[in-house]
Image: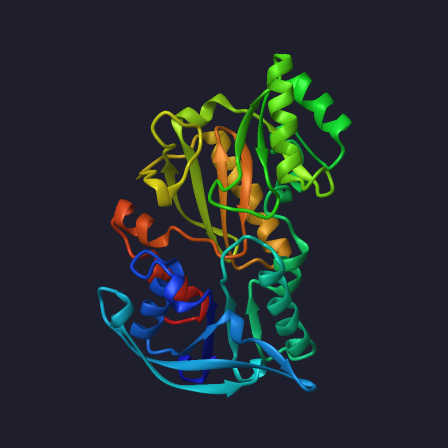
Length: 324
């Protein structure tokens, strides 16, 4: 399909909430504009079922200036459109994966069911059917020893066996809600119970406990995949005096070279993504363990481009839309 036939829609969180200069979606939109694609933008909150039809409010992208400040984007007038009006839709609202994320996605899926002419990137069954925190469990012994449960007795048993664990909410991202738990003393167990009780809503929702990996002190390796091929890698460095990586709070990126074992992991991950028909993904490693899949809105492209001194967004757009 030639680029003139594409009608690309980008769905994001509300405009005023975006980090415009660093946002991966807006960087991809900028490169798509340079490549001559016809593209539109939509606020996720505008997706609605009106009578028997799913519609949304979209603005045509007219111009994007190089600095990507909020005022750098020029749009056409707001139009009420059907999702099947587009050949490609990128649903790139950020976690948490809560009802505000899931319900608009369900409406899109309803509107597009049976309409093969419109591609949703990534596919809807992937976005609402897979969990980024434990997708790695399908790849065998590549995920650190972990337990996902809402039952205190099972979480307690795992915690005492490991001694130190990382607590992760299943719906969050960017280190939100992550805690290091020490199960070695009665006081530590009481603190762990209190944190898990809070995050699990009084043990009604499952959480993930995972072995604490000392290798995190050397950083976390980000693998970025495009159509089941490894696009680029960087090292994400934890915050000073902390075990967590949080780019918004100042974690830095650095170039990195994969070890032989990490390269083998990358090959297996790539095949897994191909099997799932996942076009865009970012996967995080600590040492030789897979700790996270990022399938909803894989990011860091702008910072990776700066770190690696290359144009990753162009490669992504050219591959996605078969632009030579």
